[in-house]
Length: 212
View 1: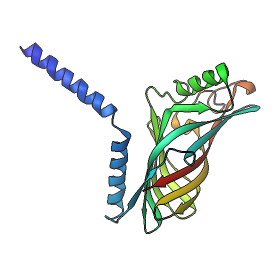
View 2: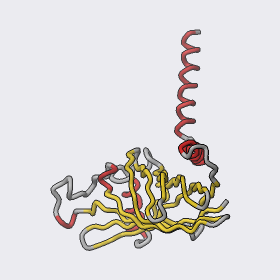
View 3: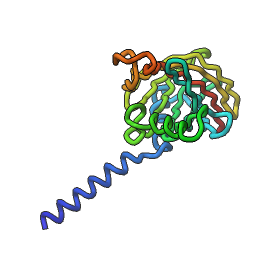
View 4: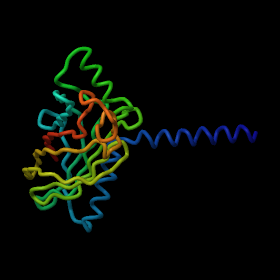
């Protein structure tokens, strides 16, 4: 009987852990918006949902010696505004949607799979990345970028058009991938032949549209 009780208890613990790992994007957004609302001294904020269409896109560019590759990653999220100013936000990037745009066929499949495996973003263990927006001063946006459970504060120029029913924005920024534990092919960490070195920098070009 004791063994049966212990067995049931163990199963319940495993089920609980599995449920926690599968926490939905909506739950993450609700938690983030609630947290940000408290930091704004209970100030009112209007929530705008990011639309998944041609006006919301993230294009990444990575480089090795003599060649660049670029592609996209899908994302969703929400932005919070008060009195016509951006005050909060959370964007969640689905790393399983890494999609190289400048290659086709076997070359494209090979690069996509390589970027998704343990050498780079390890999407099996880290299926998503996120940007938690903390402030926007009208010119520069500051937020916490989390990749592979490593969080770094970043600040970069951005333009936003905030209207009563929508927010449309654009931004370009660069990160050093080694700051997030992505070391494969880095000349900063390994003694590699020049034609094997992959740039530490990843460039991002983001367009976003969010509506109420």
